[in-house]
Length: 253
Image (cartoon, rainbow, N blue to C red; front, top):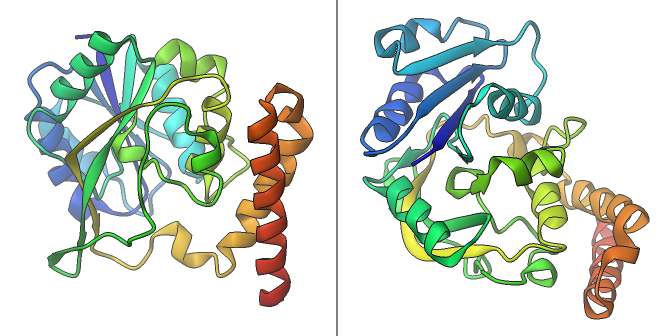
């Protein structure tokens, strides 16, 4: 395997060791890169015990998770990249299974299902959180249906797409997958191979009261830049979703 796992962190030190341990439990990882996005307290204290198995980089100011992930990819030496948020956990052999799945099916990008863990218990996912594989553009217009902690991607593809949009502090995963799904087949594994945890209340998306307005801005910008690259049915779906979101935002404001 030629795989690097990127773990961005900002202030969630108490979960970082769990995240790192879950990556070390994978059998074939080239490197783990922790990018500290200028946390209030150095997370190096938690990484030190893992050296040299883990590489550590700290930014000189808080730049956001998009920049942190992009930095991690730029530092990586592997052909493939996986991401893990610092409060999430890989299940054993997640990376091995997903990597083999991608090679066997010649996918350049894939994601998996996940467990949700809230307030010390596993919970059922929302009924409207279906996930998809294949040509998924029209199916992910409403919301982000690909969790970063389940994502694995060929490094060349990630870099050719210019990575995460560093101007976005939220919905950066939503925006990236829209771009990638224009002309890439997205692999999907139904098995739940990651645990998405929400132990604290500081998730960025919770700090954005009107998250739908952020998605609307992303879609309108996307239409300006990429409409001519879309299939007819996808451009129709995009316009319909923009109209739907406009009506939602009007009601909010």
